[in-house]
Length: 367
Image (cartoon, rainbow, N blue to C red; front, side, top):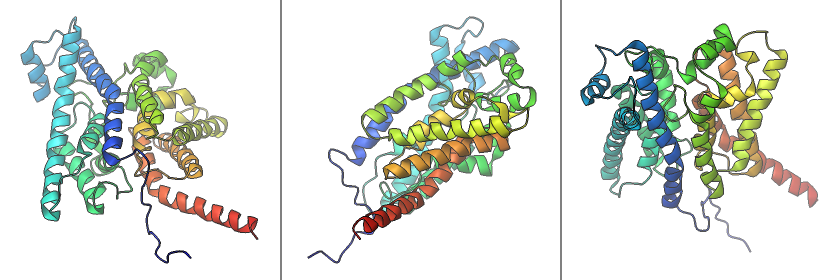
């Protein structure tokens, strides 16, 4: 005797787990990356300002920092943190305001309470932005993230894409100059960590050395780039929290790393003698947004595979896609966001295939 009614979607029943708990832990895991973003953004800005001897005609951030009288010649920790907050806080506040307006609008239309999770989406969007991002572009990306990445599917727990990934991807596709086409530091020409691939493609490792990019600085996050993606140490701390609390799957994270290493090995073996195809795997890990995407974006419970085998497969696909995008288009700022987005789209299909194989296997075992 079995009921004829079957659930069409997973009930998401899990002991000691709730959406509020998951979002709280994800937010706590992002704190190290957020702190690193403030410190590194302030340091890199003041260093670039020192290199050019100051600027006279910049944007509102430059005028605000100049008005605060920060010492860029010999900056103190207070100067560095203040300069970082001038860049990070406006982006975060704008993302929260824009997202909050859309959340409230949908709550009124649907006659229900506002959902949680906005703060996590806003922090992720902030960390995926360059310090000099246009607030208009940010507002567009955040609006797209909330409307088409969350609200249109019915809200939290019913989406299959990470809203922040979708918002950042739309900015990359719709406005190619929004995140990479202009200098990350308005009025200050400098190298970005995500542009390191273009530098290497043009002149090899010498270009990275000339830009002051080495393994140790890249590990700590002392390089220019998208605000939250530079420090592998900070990302690893957050990843440890997610894995320890079982919010993120270690299989998915390790699968992405294996996919990246395998794709790099194939490129090194069969690629041409110059360009990104010859770049070592550890540089792919240290530079750009791969580590951030692997830990905080691809592991979103709503947009990742739910079967263990599916997590391995999704991870391998995402890691390989990152390398393919970087090698195929080194001028692109990074392949992590697009790779994670494509992996999330494939996740339901991957799970379906895994379940189908398991059903067939059990059917054969029982005759």
